[in-house]
Image (cartoon, rainbow, N blue to C red; front, side, top):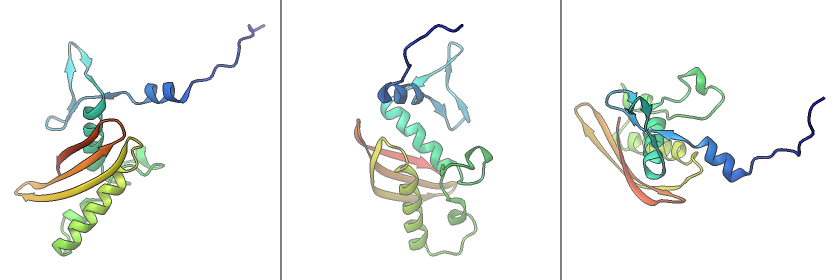
Amino acid sequence: MFPETPDLTVDTAEKNAMTSKSFLFDFTTGDFVVRNGKLVECDGTDAIRIWIEKILRTEKERFKIYDDTNYGCRLEDLLIGSNYTAAFIEAELKREIEDALLQNPNISAVANFSLARTASGIIVSMEVETNDAGTNTVAVTL
């Protein structure tokens, strides 16, 4: 009744290319960037930067959509109302951020952390080494 076809398989590289589509996100406005009525696609370094900022801004285990994953960072307990020493907070922030970022298979290393406190939060800067784009400095305001 059904036509016979050879087994269809998707090569791993093609599968990764299909699932790794990223879109520009403006964290200031809290919305995706739209041009001519369409989401603006990004790749390479821009996609990594968007992914990094999103994972750092997502509190781990807060949202049900991420319940069965290890997505996000536990930063609020360290930053809000804690009585921990500054050295402890800095060491834990570094550990949490590095653990979260190394989940991305395109990121091979995270180094040279620096934290700067501002009136509205903390600016985290780091060097992120990727498999295809080399080392890039990334700064995120939390």
